[in-house]
Length: 185
Image (cartoon, rainbow, N blue to C red; front, side, top):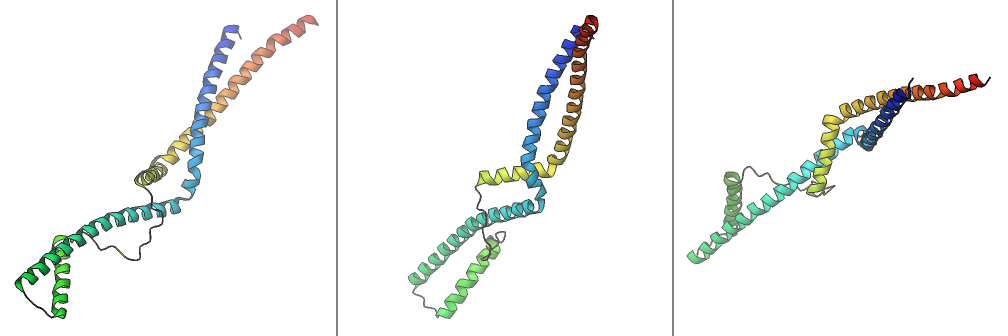
């Protein structure tokens, strides 16, 4: 092997070593995700809980808005009743108030479900935390397995190629020493 070929091999070794380091760093990033991927069912349960919590929060705001409007209507009706000096039996008044509330919800806010009283908020993530978690879930669902396998295969191949180049360099560097030893004998 000529000195020029040896230098080319060393340059290729250097480039491959840099590539190996980059791949190793990528694999380390995936090693952080592996425990989450292994806990797939738990992760999916958390994801579902976060969706329910977000929906609950949105429903609460909408429900509060609906209740506010209903209270405004009830107050206006009460004002009108007082101005008209009408007197109703309390059972009749309660009946009509409850019917008005039901009908307003039915005809104007039917798309807003009532908030369940027994729903428990477990995580209370902020929007950014929820987005980060959803990004992790999407990574695991859509690209983790294929990308990790591809990177791992590429890393193994590169490592084997690098070992082969190292052997060639080591063998090439041994040859002159052996020639010197043989000439001395």
